[in-house]
Image 1 (cartoon, rainbow, N blue to C red):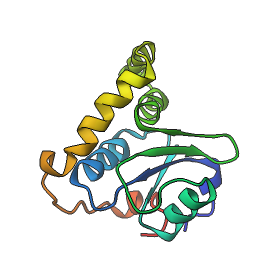
Image 2: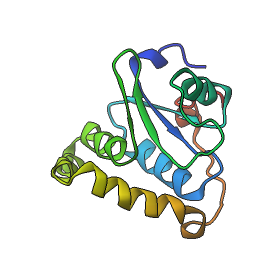
Image 3: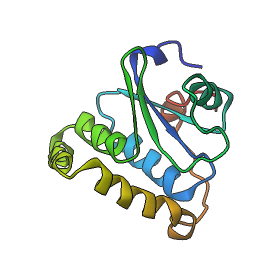
Length: 137
């Protein structure tokens, strides 16, 4: 495990979901400031994160963004914050924050419910540099 994970934003995702893995790859390719690390919700690290917060530990349909000792965000709030942190054109996603969370989370839930149908289950193989960004690979 990389020693400085506590200084990063941790993206927790469903490690068995093609859509989730696509988005992890998308973030990896755009993380020019090296501010993200990743952990599957199924990993020991992911399970500990969930358990410590009293969150569901067997259903993995929610993405979490955690900044240790500061905050964690879920669903659409996590997605919008990730885009904002990536900066550049993605900062425009901040406009999505004007949409009430209940509506944006409803869209998130619809996508999440159908995610296994939306993407193939191909296995993404990160580069050696990208592999260092994963906790418990």
